[in-house]
Amino acid sequence: MTQIKIRNLTFKYPDSKSLILDNINLDINASSWTAIIGHNGSGKSTLARLIDGLLIPTSGLVEVGGMKVDENTLGIIHQQIGFVFQNPENQFVGATVADDVAFGLENRQISRLEMDDRINNALAMVGMTKYKNVEPINLSGGQKQRVALAGVIALMPKVIILDEATSMLDPRARQEILTLLKKLKKEYNLSIISITHDLNEIELADKIVVINDAQIAKQGSPAEILGDKELLLKIGVGIPASQQLQSLLVERGVIIPQKYLNLEELKNWLSQQLQ
Ligand SMILES: Nc1ncnc2c1ncn2[C@@H]1O[C@H](COP(=O)(O)OP(=O)(O)OP(=O)(O)O)[C@@H](O)[C@H]1O
Image 1 (cartoon, helix red, strand yellow):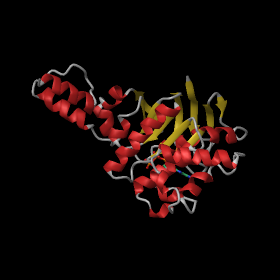
Image 2: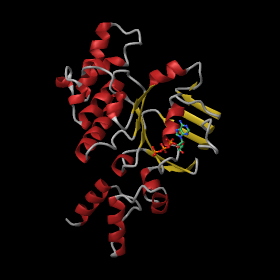
Image 3: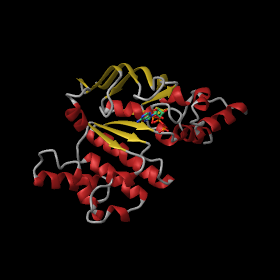
Image 4: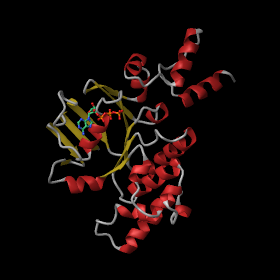
């Protein structure tokens, strides 16, 4: 089922000289993971803000859950989409972790009882229950991002947009957040849209969308996009470790069955060959 439909979308900020996005057409399925990649300033965050209705298209259509995003539907659209940003510091408003998770629920006509339930649930989901009464300022970067995620989960959205949400974390905290997101996606049938430069995060996607020169340069499966070295170098993402290793093996005459294997698949294939 299509969750987000974008047709002939163009966008320009009032003071921009040329189009930031030019004729974007994209379908994002329910319960799918989509990575949006492209070089700095290519328009990824702008696209995310258009999906959430924080910006309104210059022309064209954005639909979320079958509803056109415009001034009249913003309230309903915001309830379906949760955002997690790069810097968790900028997302905190509450004096304690619990207050912070509660913040988004406060204007939603939800009873105190249900609110407490949702806060407890969300904190349990992200493994932060014991920090409920701690001041957010005293948490590590990874913990802060977990709390930010709990704030979003408590709103029970259908879609979570991660705007470089793991880029300030160390590799371990990043991996933990990604594992958590996989679990949440499964548990709640969420769609995840991740704007990222991180290859590990990109590899998790069902579909990768490449933005370049204001347009979608290519969209496809990880195999189709991460196997396209020329494109990856053009947009500055780099070549996945799995692809570098695969090239090395192919150069030395090893015949590998598929053009693209992710690191896990390549490891499994190699260990089978070495048995
Ligand atoms: N509020 C704004 N007003 C005018 N121009 C803007 C505004 N926000 C972004 N831009 C411009 O729009 C273009 C796209 O910005 P955007 O933040 O969407 O890119 P991005 O791909 O997310 O970049 P990054 O990877 O660096 O986060 C850039 O040239 C940027 O300078």
